[in-house]
Image (cartoon, rainbow, N blue to C red; front, top):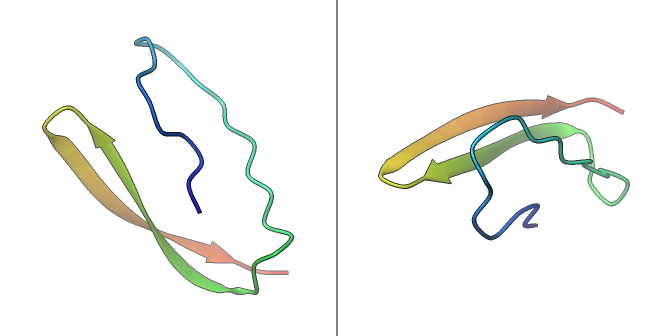
Length: 46
């Protein structure tokens, strides 16, 4: 699943995430900006 793919201007952005098709569990997501990459963990509980 891909939420955003493209360049955004600097600043604060909000993206709506619809997890209807996902099951409860632990998911990893990656944020990449230029040379910066960070992988984080998200717990989804339904």
